[in-house]
Image 1 (cartoon, rainbow, N blue to C red):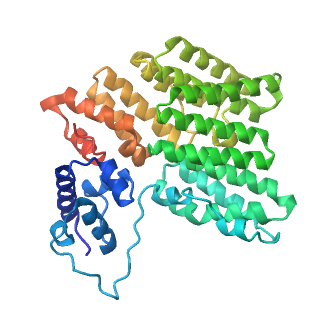
Image 2: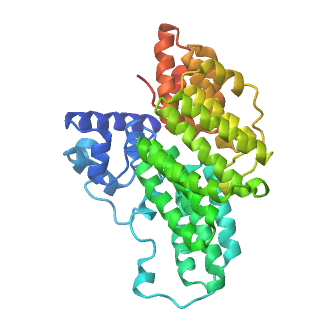
Image 3: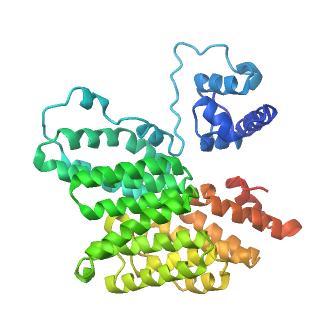
Length: 413
């Protein structure tokens, strides 16, 4: 049942037509068949093939048609010798990891303490964060599938002297998962992952790990548009930290977390349209970055003077201050930061130019961002909205490169 790209596009259009005839949204149909809306979107756009007969039958059942009506060349039953083709899509497998208790057998029959290869797990978690910073979500998802249960089991059954470190590794793994879910607009899953990160961090005994996890939780609330919850989580954490670390000049890790929480609050206030409070939080973040004095990556927060200015560009765009965003953003050297941060700056510059209806400059910035991180531009809500705006601005004079970008990001109006 292998199909060409053109056949995938025809099939996807057929799925979309049948779904619309049933009066279902992508989210509703995806929920009905136990898949994600992002997977269904890619099917309808001809990106994601449906090669497995069982998945094809599931989709046909959800649409209320026969398999043959959905795809004329489909066999009535799969040949016995035909192997199942594994599908991988964004963070689907990672969602399954957090959809229940990670190691129920340990609850029923706790294993006796045994050795855990902590160094190997540490390297695996470092790789998880490399994938997260690079927006390599499909590989991240497949990596986490077996890794999370391994660390969960090890943290519960390893000798006592290793458990604190293992709980810390587990917290960092869930933080990476929360960050990835936020970027993929899977905020409900990000909430679950962040909450598990907080719990694991408490078990680790690393206080600052707890607050870094709260930062991830506040990001999930922002993506859910629960700005009151986002503000509450970030503010309570920040108040406690600043009381405890009043003289934190000698503790860079504490400064990184404090600064990141100020940036979180700046975004929250900007999203709420509170210009004054957003700028107050940006000022405080800059002050913390100045005390830190360098770009660091404590708890994978990438906090430092450069990242603060990247966030300042984003905040200016949120507030509609396109000129300020362009002035700050075009002067930044982001070469020392992750692909995700560098691509995010380019994306926000594209948004700023779009606010000024400078189509050519906006397109150039978005294409630069796509070169750095295609997944960010193809899946980020703000990027796709910007592409749609540019198409409307350009009208009949739309450059072919913009049309092609809109097709890749499924961002046609």
